[in-house]
Image (cartoon, rainbow, N blue to C red; front, side, top):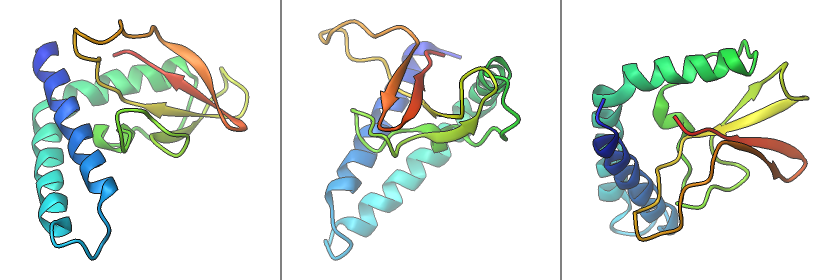
Length: 132
């Protein structure tokens, strides 16, 4: 799996999700943007799904979770700045309660360096950022 291709595909998906997130259902562009997003998601899952599902399985095992691994696109945030409702909730024996897993792209080289994997607060629940 080519990391640069994966990152570019992740960034394209997140940008398209963010674009859709700004539109209302009655916007004339909504259906076209939504269809474009679904095409990008299908291509992403075809191109990177098996490798990412294997990596996510390892994350689930590390977190001691018996929650099913979903398609990688389920873990994507709606914008480039994940919100507490983004990603997938999983049960974890390693961390108290449940944690939310979010699959994020690395920022462009001109941005600040990517943060390492860490647990952060998402309201009353824990979120875990994991670099795959």
